Image (cartoon, rainbow, N blue to C red; front, side):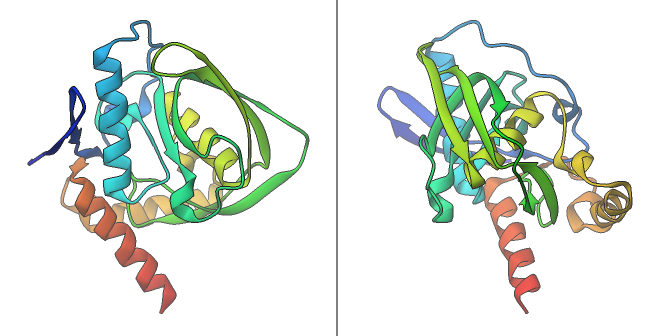
Length: 208
């Protein structure tokens, strides 16, 4: 599969293919990052460009086949960047739920393109971790950013958002996955452009 490459300073950033539902890397717990080096910066650059190329607001390293505890996020692209730290990268992340308020709303995943289901998450969390240079990071996240932090951290634990659905909805979601063109074709990897196109086609179809 062709990869698109652009230069970002000393690093050649590559838009990577996206791993899809069915790839074992998505169901495995990712490893802690211990080396804060050029390879990690390369990974963060690849993740960021692949996320943008796929039309997403977050992406975890396993989604491009790398089993490390890293995710990137950019909720500004959704026009709702009301929380601090609306764009960046978090390495070895954890989060703490703040309060009891919850949010229920549509959620999708770049590794399950074309599908969206309502998921209940905490409305507010405090996210902690380190940046790609190994410096401590902590920020409050609410609304969309809080949802993103929880969704991407799930990815690092081998959990897909479909597992957060109630039993009845999950059965329907799994049927929709099996009926999707990419799953029926046996695909476990797709280009970022294909993921974006599948996502947009699904959104357009729901709008009719």
